[in-house]
Amino acid sequence: GAVVSQHPSRVICKSGTSVKIECRSLDFQATTMFWYRQFPKQSLMLMATSNEGSKATYEQGVEKDKFLINHASLTLSTLTVTSAHPEDSSFYICSARDGRSTDTQYFGPGTRLTVL
Amino acid sequence: AQSVTQLGSHVSVSEGALVLLRCNYSSSVPPYLFWYVQYPNQGLQLLLKYTTGATLVKGINGFEAEFKKSETSFHLTKPSAHMSDAAEYFCAVSDLRSSASKIIFGSGTRLSIRP
Image 1 (cartoon, chains in turn cyan, brown):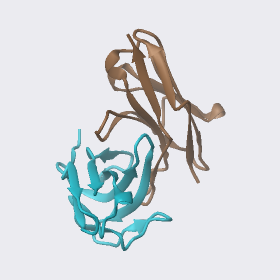
Image 2: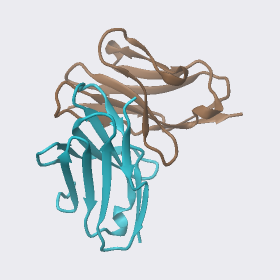
Image 3: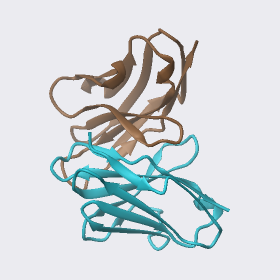
């Protein structure tokens, strides 16, 4: 099946710094990518939807200036957590939709962010 | 608007017993329905999905689910639980008919398997 990778898988940073997470579709072109956040023992909450070459659409309550999303190519989307704080510590998961088919999203393995 | 309700945040069954994880959905349009499994510190793996056609859907690892429109349900079952089935399971709904549509996840059910 289709593969989506995320890098890094785990990151620890100091409060106030910015962290970039990459999401790549390895064997298909992803016209749409999604970013989710998951707190411990909770479900996935959609943060934003990004379409290649256009601005991301953020869900209500998600600060677009804090969580910068760039979808510059059909195989890469990045999420930058700016001026990270301990409350941003979470598991971030991306998913990608194959441009040839709209009925399936492929999920990345997730990135564990810990802000000290 | 679409939503998903998973009944039971934690289900525990004995190895070899029937697994039943409940999911009810709400959707104003014909839904696409999914079950995903998540192992600790990992992403989501698709178990099965319903889009159109046959209402009984078979997935990986012996799991299956039945779409029942009259009950707005999409319960996940497996005849005989295995220790390796212990994980978090998420039911999800979407209207994936356009590139703007999203997948909405339920709150998840943690499945434990007793030896």
